[in-house]
Image 1 (cartoon, rainbow, N blue to C red):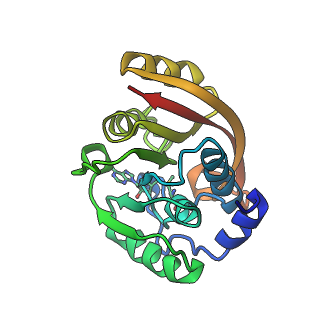
Image 2: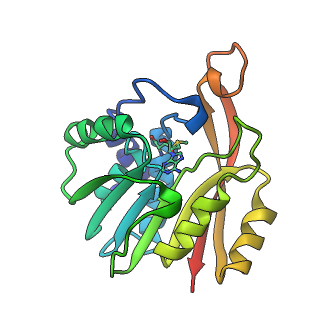
Length: 207
Ligand SMILES: C[S@@+](CC[C@H](N)C(=O)[O-])C[C@H]1O[C@@H](n2cnc3c(N)ncnc32)[C@H](O)[C@@H]1O
């Protein structure tokens, strides 16, 4: 298995959104964060020999990271067709070996049944733009339906919400770690070049 920094280096070529839609919280997950999430999942045995679904795949960053390891297949789902075309181009740039399908669909109502052991990865919208607190709830519900394990990125301070959602949906949080996320300025309505937000990543086992 390559190191987390080697994985991040492979992902550095992933191009960002051409016309980011603020309402859909479209920003590229930083390669370092994607590499850390997928490397950790791989160390837990959650990538190799399993099917991987990336909900709200955007530029394809998390799907591509997984495809650089040993999954049986990967699907990246996004509601917006524009980033999916960028994700396809990024697949060529990164030069992944695993088979990836790019699917336009509402991730909260994804028409999928992999029939395999499945890991869901996601950096869902946080609801920051419309003050729609826990917009990530519907994504977690899909993870519970499609996967037996999921890894998701949430705003720092979401621990109580994520743990209680998991408990109510036959899930258990088994790992959590913090990571920093650089957001482009338009997502926080200020003039700085970028803005760092604290996030937490949760591994959940779904029964
Ligand atoms: C924070 S971005 C994640 C970006 C992606 N991980 C990447 O690194 O490019 C959230 C993504 O969720 C997508 N999205 C928002 N609502 C969605 C929905 N209901 N169904 C599917 N995708 C959705 C957005 O279009 C956006 O690409």
